[in-house]
Length: 297
Image (tube, rainbow, N blue to C red; front, side):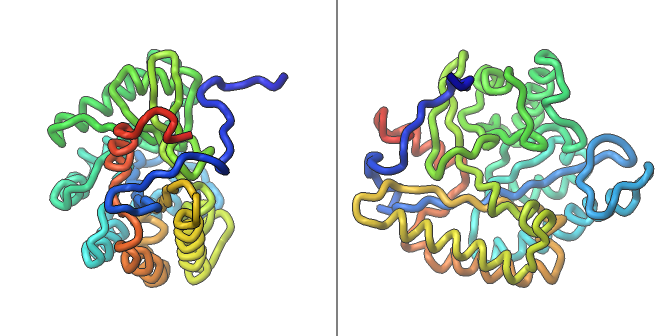
């Protein structure tokens, strides 16, 4: 018998209950913007070029470009298309780049927990240290935004065996670390239920643009194809509703030659808002909480 996680049972997509998202839509969509900050010359990093001894100014500065330039270009596009987002934001950003969370606040965007900085990860932490880190993020976001975050994405999508119970204890209602489904999935943790929100790794800009080295044109087409196919599947006869997620990093898609093609994909999604529900991830999670038991996987 294979070792099991015990969080959720196997449930095939075929034969699941039908329901609709708000407005009668069969496809819900959310855009997650990963806004991350790194200390200079220490900790984990995302490497564009082969890593060098610290201070590795090449890899530090291209990440810093995302906060100085990329996020503002991306927000201009989102504003023009009237698209809401969920900001997966390191809390160190409040001190390093306070204008960025202020911009999210002015737009009315959701801010989800994403650790203190992406220079560290939970898998390197003892349970007590992990809980203190998560609790510190909750306290900082609550102090700055006037309400606690309801969603969490771990730095580096990293967990320990203690992570999910800690998230429940600290008041989180959904998590994005897992990606087993195209619908939200209820997890049963030792501390209570927690919703797993779909977070598509395959269409994330980091593995596609940086890992697979897709051209910006091809990446935009991947996003469009994913959206069109999911919309067609969700609207099929007897089909269950689905969630389309798009995850972006300003230090990647904020580069002008990439942004030009991302606009095409985002415009395509926005043009279909009459057939899908475009909302922050927290709003989708809140709607799932109103569904009867058994409606979701």
